[in-house]
Image 1: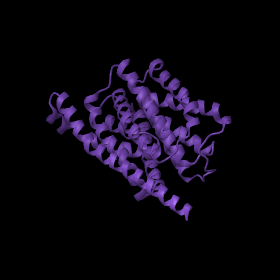
Image 2 (image 1 turned 135 degrees about the vertical axis):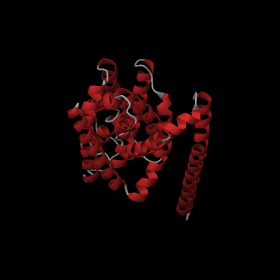
Image 3 (image 1 turned 90 degrees about the vertical axis):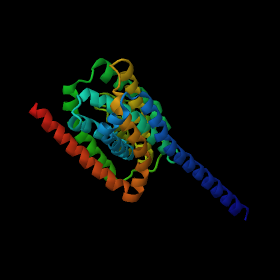
Length: 303
């Protein structure tokens, strides 16, 4: 009887906590666009005309954040092709917008993941030094340039698409939520490669680490993806700061629109995952990534 009462109390407490989180989230989603509009109209020189031209970027941010937060691949998979082919922006400018957008979208997604899924804390200890080193080299030492971005995005996009398919179809090795110390050095190397790639094409860190945790270290898929999303958020924020301070700044007149969509995309991602099925969505996104990659390779070969 006592045990039953304690169980009911615990369930009631969990329910109240969940309701409180939902109320906070709803309040934020209502307040956020109002804050965005206030800042936008205060800073934009011609806000109405700019909004008429660039409102499709809000939808771009929405789709990019959904893809990024369900697979940890990053919204750059959407942002860079759209910016280059639809808005005809230079590849380096597209990269800057993608990084700034991911800083908000992946951070919002990471906060959502942290509220319901445990992350692999040991992974952060080993991965963060690697990703910071890789991101620093690919942005400060080997600067991103148009030829590098367009030439690398295609193969990376195809590789990440295949990686998503393999992790979606792979049988779960275990349900562990923590990593064994024997994987420390390999994880450092994988996160370094992810940071290196992210500095050039905005995607890579989250998915390569998530795939490594699932396929090699035997960490369960939800913990792996949550950890990958958090790591990509850290990488994107770090790279955005580098571009803002050292590499000519971020084109905020474009990024502000994708950022608005990103926050809502991050909130919508788990709902779509439940309604449609995360595996179906991941395979769809992977197919888009592969087609994206083929298009970039074709364009690169023509130039």
